[in-house]
Image 1 (cartoon, one colour):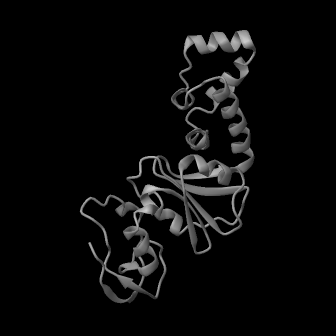
Image 2 (cartoon, rainbow, N blue to C red; image 1 turned 60 degrees about the horizontal axis):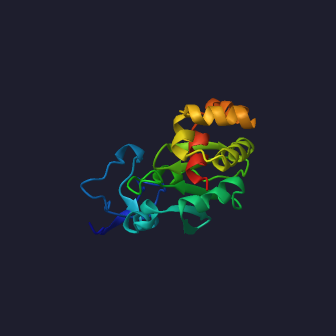
Length: 193
C-alpha cells in the first residue's frame, strides 16, 4: 500500500511531533498495532522502514541516521563491542515480524547496558559483561559439538553428560542450565558461530 502525504502532525511509530506525516503503509496482515503510539500518521523516515523490507528481513545496526544490514551470525561482534552512541541493534531469525518498531523510540547511549530488538523475544536488555561470559561458555560448549537447540532447551542428552564427566567439562553444562530461559542467553546462542 502506497502512502500519501497528509499534513504536519505526530508519528504513530517513532513518536516525533510536528513532522510531515503520511498515511500508514500497513498491509492487511500488519500485527504491530500494540507497538504504536498516539499520533496522526507515519513520518517519512518511519515510512521508509516499512517500505524497505530489509528492516524486517535482515538484522541491522543503526548508528545516528545510518543503518547497516548484517546476517545474524555477524551481529555477535556488535553485541560484544557495540558501536559508538547513539545506536540501535535489531536481530531477526524469522524475518516476519516488526520487533524493530520500539527501537525507533529507544536509542542506546551506553555500550555496557543497552536494549536490542528481536523478532523472537521483542525487546531485550543486554549487559555486556554478562553476555561476554555467556559467549565464552557458548563457544566452549559449541567446541564440544553442543547444538544450538540443546543450548536453548537445556536438554543435554545422556551421552553429552557422560562425555562431559569423563572429559571434565560437566561444570560448563551446569552453567548453561543456569542460563536457560535467560533472554540474553537466547540472544547469544542465536548469534553464536
